[in-house]
Length: 167
Image (tube, rainbow, N blue to C red; front, side, top):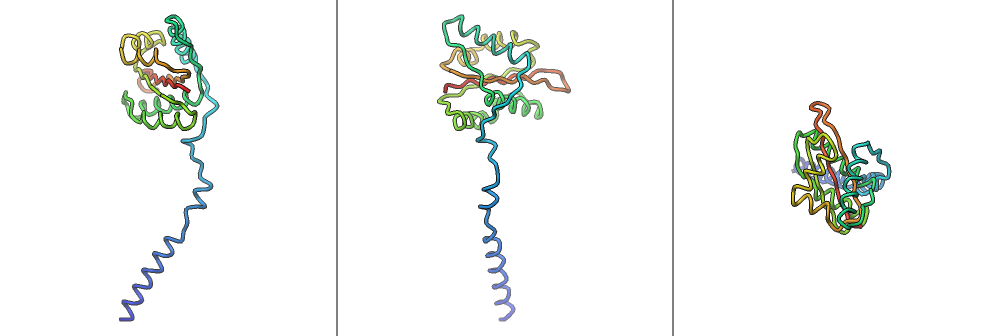
């Protein structure tokens, strides 16, 4: 009887000890990087050229040019790195990227184009314009955008992620 009581008390003590270790202190010091605005981004020549080509196209058909936002380019770069690391070409986690841009930047709508293995920005833009869904994004009711173009160091192939937002 005493042994059962001792075991029960020990179990209660362990449960109390585990529950008394509050995570509030650690949560207060943890930084939620998913909701912080990224302000610095270094654009390479291909990224600048692609944004210029997209804006030139938009203006040529009577649309507004888009303003670049470093945070959107950073989210684009994260996706390029994901695709390179996982050897895939897809829109995986677009919902998370979109929700982040909505939360951090106050975007109303977000859309995304990706491309793979185009050697020049013009070739990527031509492919996007030849695809109805991608063209719709380029011609969409957006105000801002970001882009990342990364090269797989093993294969040398380029990955493009272009995200559009209306803010």
